[in-house]
Each structure stands twice: as C-alpha cells, then as structure tokens.
Length: 625
Image (cartoon, rainbow, N blue to C red; front, side):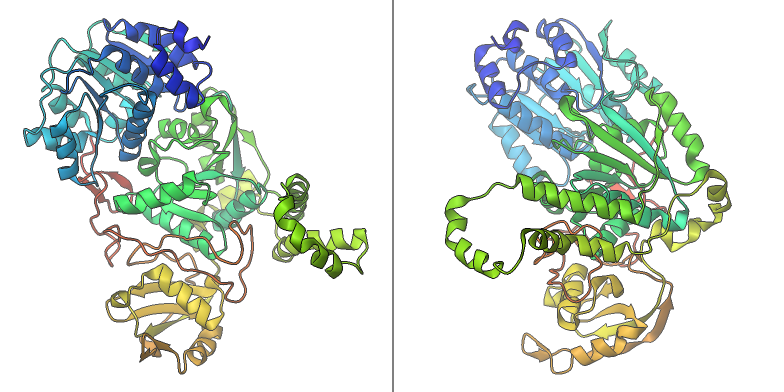
C-alpha cells in the first residue's frame, strides 16, 4: 500500500502522485499532512527548500475543497513568478485524475487579461504573487469572501522582498474564520510577527533546527585573489565535467557579465535576472530544465522558486548580502533527498562571513584548493573515458557504417587508436592549462590583495588588452542584437569571440570593439561583403580606443541570450575558441527584456520592479523590519 493512503490521501490523488514518482512522504509531508487534513488549525511549518512543502499543503487542499463549487476557496501566496507557476503545475498534476479542479496562476509579467478570463470562468485555487494579486483585487475582479484557506509559501522571502503591505491588503479581503497555513525555510522575527498577526494558536512544526541547511549538502569555500576570481571559477567548473549547476551573483549586471563571458569562452551557460521579459525567462528555464544548459547564472530574486531536479552544484560567485539568503541558494541542490555541493568563491576578508553562515546553517565549510591545470586535464580525460565506456550503442543504426570505420582504422593498433581518440578532447585542455598558475590565495596574501576589487578580474571577466572601436552599418533594424552581431562578426572574420570587446547595437548602425591586432583582419574580411543586398561598411570609430576592457566588460544595450555553440555539441569545457568555431550568436529574444542603453533602465519583473544604483535585483517596495 502507498504510504500516502495511510496519511489520509484518497486513491485518485495517490494514483496521480505515484505516476509522478512519489513513493514515500518526506518528513515535512509525513508530519504536516495529517494535521492539515483536519482543516481545523492554523499552521506554521518550518522546513528547508526542496523538502516537499508544495505537496505538504497541496494534497490537503485537494482533499478539503468542494470542487462542485466554482468560486475561490483557497489562496496560495508566494514571492516569485517561477514559484507561482511551479506550485500551479504541481497542484494540477496532483489533481490529474480528479474532475472540475480549476487552478489559476496569477503573476506579473504575463497578460492580466488572460488571468482575468480564467478567474471569470471559475476557479477554486488561486496561486499568486502579491503584486499582481493586489492589482486584480483593486480591479474588483475577484471575490475572496468565501475563501477557506490561505497559504503563505516562502513567507520569509516574501517579507524580505518587501511584500508585507501587499499581504496585509490582500488578507484584509478574506474572511476572519479562514485557516492560514504558513511555510518558510527560515524563521526570522518578521515571519514570527506575521504568524502572530494572522493566526490563532497555530500548530507549529519544525523539521530540523531552525534556519539550518540541508544535511545532504556539502559546503566548500575557495580563497582566491580578486583578479583571479573568474579564472578560478572556470577551473572549478572544468574540474567537474558533469556539472549541472546554478551560479549566484549579487547583481543583475554581474549576472549578465559572467554569463556573457562564459558563452564567449565556450561554456553552455545563460543568465536569469529581473531585466528579462517573461518570454525570455521561460525560454532560459526551458533550456535549463531540458539540460541544454549546464550553468544558469542568476540573482537571488530571479532564482527563487526554481525547482529543477538533479542540480549538482550551487556556486556562490558572490556571497549574498544577507546571510539567510545562503540557505535559499544552497537549497537549490540536494532536493528530494539527493546530495549536492554548495561552493563559495571568496577573498580573505570574507572569511568572517563564511563563519557567520556556518553558525546559521549549523554546518562547517570545507576549505578546498583550486585544482591545478594538471588536475583538471586528468579529470577531463577520465570523464571522456567513462563516457566512452558507458555509452549506449545503437547497433541497428551504426551497423551500416562499421565497415568504413574499420577500414579507416585498419592500420592502427588498439593502443594507438585509444591514444588518438582520448586526445581529441584531452589536447584541448592540455593546451589551455599549459603553464596554468596556482590560483589559490593564502589568508595573508588575500588580505594584501583587498585593493584589487576595482580590477576587471573581479567584476568583468576577461583579459587585459587594448581595443579599437569600430563602426558597422548594421543594427537593430536589421534584426541584430548583441549576440547576433557577435556571431556575425566571428563567422565572417574567423576571429575568436573572446577577442571581441564591448558591442553597442543602435538602430541602423552599431559599434563593436576588437583587439588592436585584429583590426586589419576585420576590415579586410568585410571587403565586398553584402547583407540583404547592401554593402557592409566597417570603419574605425572617431571615438577612439579603449584600454584594459577585456571580453567581460559590461555591455550596454539589449540582452544577449546564450544559445549553445553549433559544431561542438554542447558544453565545451575550458576551450579557447580559435577561429570562427561556427558560433551561433545568442538567439534573438522576443519581448521587452532589454536594458536601456544607459544601463539603468526600468524593466518589469513583477510589474513593480526597478534596478537600483548598484544594479541589484530587488523590488521597488523594500522595507526593513
């Protein structure tokens, strides 16, 4: 018998969740579901991200609501659109074998008219972000007078994002006799205050020690010099060939810089931040869930609610401003009982913050050493060997080619064939890491290095070289964004994307920077080249050159999404892209997610978001409690 039946969940729901792979309830589900099924208590549940909280409240809701009635009976509030969509899809999946269950996701960045139409047709469960929900309430387009249950999911994060006023206004439209269920990963005083305000003697359930991290996560930190941060990050990635990770940055600008630098360096990466339109965000997340991306570079706010299976690593490229956010970051890995690694790349002066985090999560960090170039090459070599050993052979399809393959290799010995085959990928890393320096920084050395914060090595990855600014008579009217233009330049000139600096796309023309030694090659390559029937013109811009502006220089203009490189088959490790390499520029984004050319423009995140002076991804309403 399925254990969920013993908890009181009926057969049609249990059958649906069994198809989803639910075999045994998680501790939070096992403890909370029997309590919530009574429907008679307010409830506070404290459990880490990834422990199955959605099913903990979603399954009882499906048992307690009357689906013969088509009016709102349950409201679930959560902090981000990703989490909103995730909860909605999960509840729909749980109810797959039930009749007349209507669940609506209400969130900013999507068509409000579509959401209003769904509400008008009839709905029993509304899953919403506070900003958009309040907008719909103010339009008098929904009636919560018969709501029986309100769920506040990720309550700590909603308060941290400044939604307390919105929550107050929303809950004022619900009946006093409703039951309120609050779930949170951490329990700061603000959450305690909201529980006291909206609940009457709630049943409290704490899984583990308050605010502690997942026991299945290993925590590591690396001490590096500021100027070596990006190089050290790449080496860590290369040392983990099968990495499927999320990389956290502090600001939108840093997120985009790192993603663009990684794409240039041949890595399968893309960014997720508040300047992207909903279409762009959905496209990035679709590629990540399908594992067409290996590295997702994200801000804290943008990554909330990401529930992707089998994330192997969380990398803190920058530590969060607030220690509690580390718990949320690391919770993206080791979900549903699996194991994972959370890595922090720090300089010596941040060791105090590491000790702070240790106290909060109740677990010690392991001090790790940046692997040497030799270590990386060895790890990559044996990764190739393991893949060959474990590959599934399609006997039927390969059979027709075997005679020609065998004929091609007939003069080779077995040993010679193995050496040559392994060298195809191994040589790439061997060349890249030849004479690779030691990137580990001792504590004292790191302290002496504290003035390096202003160097490009920390904020904008890339080498230091002199660049020349060039004019090209192609722009956004020709359907170019920065990624498209980068790909066009690389394919035409056969120069590496790593050597292209800042790209500034205008309407009918654009500017781009190349290293001084490549200027003549670029100018020559575009002689007699036409684009859609008109000559392409390249000139040296009258605005002069720029020094020390490596490939990671912050770009202005529209966002370039990183479509994976063709001709290489996905992840390319630490490859130094020489030649054109068949690079296909970042796929053209639809929607209005581009940043304005001055780098500080307003872009919608939930209908009420902005970029502050430091480029941080945070709500417009931010309160400190």
